[in-house]
Amino acid sequence: MNAAPDPLATRAPAGTEDLAARFAKEFGGAPDGIWQAPGRVNLIGEHTDYNEGFVLPFAIDRTARVAVRVRPDASVRLLSTYGDQGVVGTTVESLRPGSAKGWTKYPLGVMWALKQRGIEVPGVDLLLDSNVPLGAGLSSSHAIECAVISALNELTGAGLDAEDMVLATQRAENEFVGAPTGIMDQSASLRGAEGHAVFLDCRDQNARLVPFETRPADLVMLVIDTKVSHSHADGGYASRRASCELGAEVLGVKALRDVQVGDLEEASGLLDEVTFRRVRHVVTENDRVLQTVELLATAGPAAIGSLLDASHVSMRDDFEISCPELDLAVDTARAGGAIGARMTGGGFGGAAIALTPVGLEQAVRDAVARSFADAGYKAPDIFTVSPAAGARRIA
Ligand code: ADP
Ligand code: MG
Image (cartoon, rainbow, N blue to C red):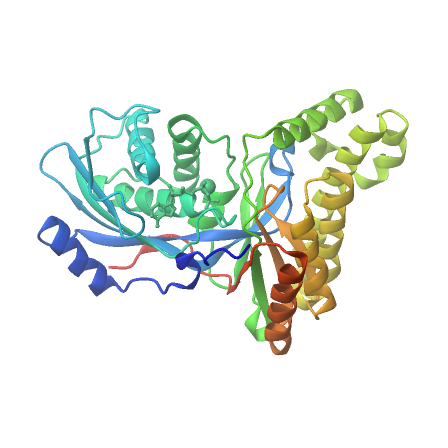
């Protein structure tokens, strides 16, 4: 049952000179510039976003880079160094939701969303190179979108701020790509900073950087991609959202954000057993995000392990969005010496994270790999990420 590792998981980012050379080979001439935007990992705060609650993602040291040149006409030519779609050609006028295929829907979605804002979008030649593994819960799609919007914002002189770009990329994903995603991923990618996580209030989009440095604390953040595929479109996600809406309605609040941990005892008498457990996850998870923010500012990352563990238990038992592979990854990482571990992302597959002492990294990797082999699961991809800079121009 072994699958080949995702080649992006072990790939170094292309240097700016290599990218420019590849651009010249494909399109002739030099790009106007090169922009990069990172993927992200959600440290804590799962299924809290659509309950108007708190999330705490961080931008990671894996990025999508785009070399872009404005064209004198409205033609668009796109090429990724990954996959085999070759150069895809279209025009700015013909952009319509549903019209794009494969990876090009992400850059084209951004161009479309900018047009919807009344921005005059020119034709471009665009070369993408990314080392954000795709479909591993690291938001490779938002990394592309955020790199592209950073480039176009500058090249068109549109003058959008981070909040505008967050909303424009959300519109690209929701309406052009057709993925019902929120604001977390692009907020992390656009607003992230090295050595920090992004504390985001999903009610008002207020964002604040919180110190989060792993290396100085002799810790590494391991990502364990279970290779179990997950889909936002499946019934599990919709039914969790419906339970949250029902809970808020019965409890008479605008969103579960407005329920406190101290209200839970009373809530248990008002809700059916399943709805109560769904509500309890969201309410306690919001509280864990706030506690994590507080601890990172005072005691540092070595102090947050038990909150990560509690988050996983809550998702496994109350929200019921884990799966055997994620539970095995988390349990094995903890048994091998990780100080805290949890599934991350929407659930039903995807990746787990394990905050691990530097000296135990190899032991944890080996233990997880062995446990997956013993269970007959696909070999997971295991790699480290660190809190890195947000989207920016690099050449
Ligand atoms: P996630 O964003 O969680 O990684 P998505 O399904 O939203 O998963 O996005 C993955 C999609 O993004 C891929 O199917 C592919 O179309 C596109 N993609 C990501 N990285 C690249 C790349 N380097 N080259 C081409 N397409 C990419
Ligand atoms: Mg995505």
